[in-house]
Image (tube, rainbow, N blue to C red):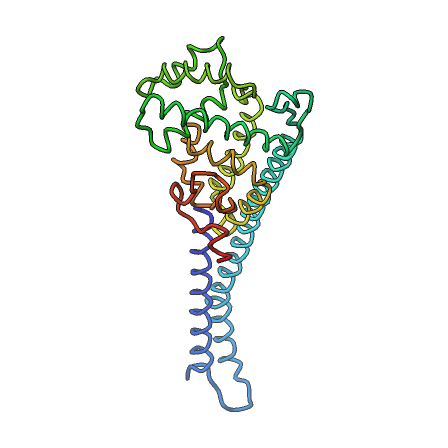
Length: 304
């Protein structure tokens, strides 16, 4: 931002000096001391005019030329910085694509346990697991007569989805849910539901998704924190990133950012500033409406 302000100041100075030079030149040429309407050249008058023009006006234009060169050099430096940021962004985008391609998980349905779900299709399975967990947590809420907000239900579901549910780390789950009243009871009932349900609702997804969301956040942060890009240029870059996200990815992403795992996203205000989830279809999140959580112009609003 400092260099951009410097360029603006230099342009103002250049424009001012150019205008001053033009005005002085105009008044000098038509000044009675130098102006001669005859067709004969007065050597003495021409000499005085040349000395004045070369000494003052010439110096003024020399300064202006130097400033123009300086502006050009600074602008080239800014363009190089922008180009470097763009190059790094697209590398992170490539890494994001590779991250998705390398995903390989098993189906949550035991009847299809031999099936290997790879690449972007893995997010369809993540979505199915989340749907199952929402059913379990809402039943626990009803059974224990808990007063849980939508945000709290989402957080409990995503903690179970991300870390998994298993007897071996029951204390760990207890600790993660300790912020809630009867958190240990919730953890216990989650484990019971996991053991009762034939589907693999308790599978951990931390290994599969940690680097995915970390890279996604850092790609947005790279663009947002760049001091040389304009807000419109930043939005164009993030628009490219947003276009890479499939609907199942947006489904998982939404619940990630609403839960405790989305703390950095919410604090930085990236979601609303760059409308990162504007492409979520209407009704796609089941009982949850993204408009209740994030204010932006959604794609369906533009269509309607």
